[in-house]
Image 1 (spheres, rainbow, N blue to C red):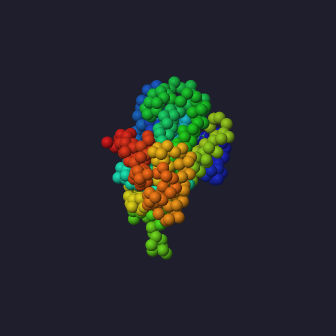
Image 2: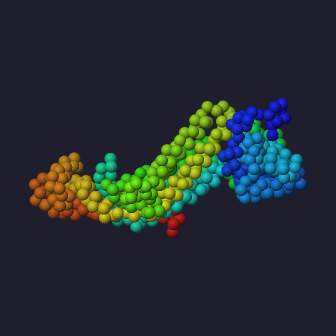
Image 3: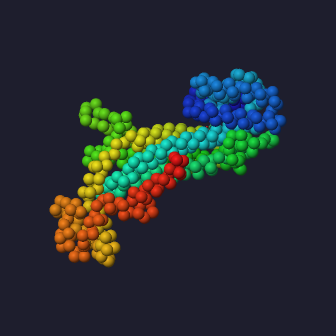
Length: 457
Ligand code: ARG
């Protein structure tokens, strides 16, 4: 393809290090779509005559069918997907194939193919995340009133509802989808026609090509177009942020499924056994989601480091852009699917959650708040009084609500019988009615909004 200038062929290792077909063949669909739009434009502009355009289009149709049916034989001498498609085209239609590359370089070609691929990846991840959101909403709805301990420092803090806890992940995933959407909007400009780096003297129509490939517009600087990989980095960042959320959810599933917590049981389909310990139900899938987050982050770091020192315009280092993006996407979509499956099928042990919420003095804040509201005690003093009540309850081995009025009044005479209304975990959660609070009414209101947001109704 560039042999004219050389007297000798490349060394075997030169060929090997140079070849990207092993991974970039994944872009065959995008490569053929880009070539179709390009050749149609060359025809419209009178750069290639109609007969050659028709022959090239027919050849591309055939190659597409061949790839769909299992691929085209690979030859490392042909380096990449772009040359494989073009060489196959030459086999099929002869010298007219050579006209396809008029006013184009592999530099703008790969930038275009890769944008198209990342755009599809974004759409695929977004659709999968919508599925996870639907699962979270369904499970939150079932458990809008289920009381569980809310934690800070992984210490029992205040009672919350399981529905509220699950909806926290809905919000995270919603921001993840927003990041993907933003990345997609910035990505959606077409580099094709930037040629090797400087543009071209042929009278091409970049706007027409952009439109045909579903881009909003052509890019505005040919040097930038062939050397920009922000779109891939943005996808990797969005994928990383999302994988961190999935990893936190996975971590909670792992903790909750452990015997000391006992908050959930994983479905058989999402558990693995042990070859030596017959009682085991291990949360391997959740652990792998947690592990994959590290690998996805590694992919983002890899591409950042690849790009950081490159002068304009194209350098071959940039061929290394694709493996981390392909890997991250595969890990992300698998992680989303696994989390969706787990969330859908978890059995929540709400009785156990409630018992733990009741045993951890989780309504201590409610007692302090009551002293402020009903007895006019300053909050700091109320905090101190409540601390004494917790100390007494702890020593007696009873929950706060089981202290007698006499015992409570022994700590502070301003306490009266109405205090028992706020000491139960149900009263506590029901009272948290501030916007975004854990009261079942608030949670249900947000669930209703969520259903509309993601088109569940
Ligand atoms: N396979 C190459 C890549 O992925 C295509 C661009 C090659 N351009 C070049 N000037 N060698 O980056």
